[in-house]
Image (cartoon, rainbow, N blue to C red; front, side, top):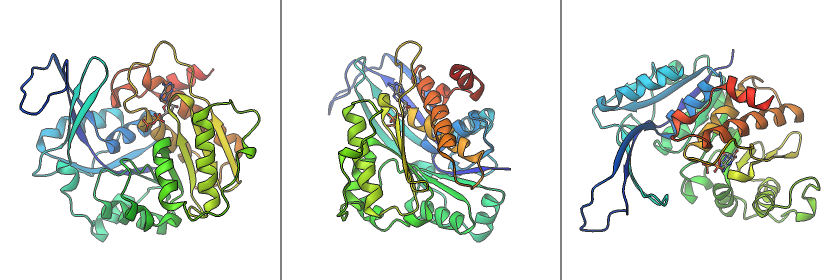
Length: 337
Ligand code: ADP
């Protein structure tokens, strides 16, 4: 049976609703306060579970974050390997204005409190029974690299959502051949091309743009970016999935060499809150991949997988919050009927 390991972050997101973001020297009152579970590791693990995948999270909180661990357990995430350490839980302090402007302070806290490199015994314990590894970039870089290399050497399918974007030097020396799937948004894809794809002499042309795709600037731009990345040779064995917000998703596979585009889901009502849409998409996508073990996907399977993930992410933006707005698979499938 497939099982996903997420080695990643857990945060407490504290939202202060304010009329204007605070200026230097000023003290202001907030009109409303909300506290929610977050962190890309926690959000994506919850999304894998909501999508029906078996998933364990390895990470750390302080004793102020034990409620978050219980919440994750409630979503169906295995939290046996979430440590409680003598540090505060990672925090995002978010000021939100009625116009949707925001201002965020991040404190890494417990996400950086575990030793960078796990012991051999910890690796064994965490990876036994794991078929898929899912990583983001909210924990120490050395830890991310260590899990990636260890998992790849054991034949585990590896998925990386490089958010927030690593430094150029980190991208240059990243072990790309150990990575099976890269999930990025449009801005991240462009940064990546600039850093690792700039040696390309074979840039591809817009003439290859599929006739049956919409004439959309975001899609055209993403198409050129993924085409150049694919031709640059920088990612010889990595498939790239690029989310495009309200435009949908574009994916580039190496075998079979093919690009796939799916428009965003049609919403019921208005966009409420796009926070966590990317995490919802990623969790659903990985849970879908898990159904195929480590074999290659056919074109039809890839389209089905993208369709379910796009539908789930669309339903996520119809509701407030990140983790709490991830829909259950049964309701996502019902919308697709
Ligand atoms: P990120 O939050 O990581 O930047 P995106 O903004 O690309 O990610 O959103 C991820 C996915 O969420 C998109 O591929 C799309 O399927 C869905 N999505 C995001 N915004 C909308 C929207 N306004 N309408 C419908 N779907 C959306």
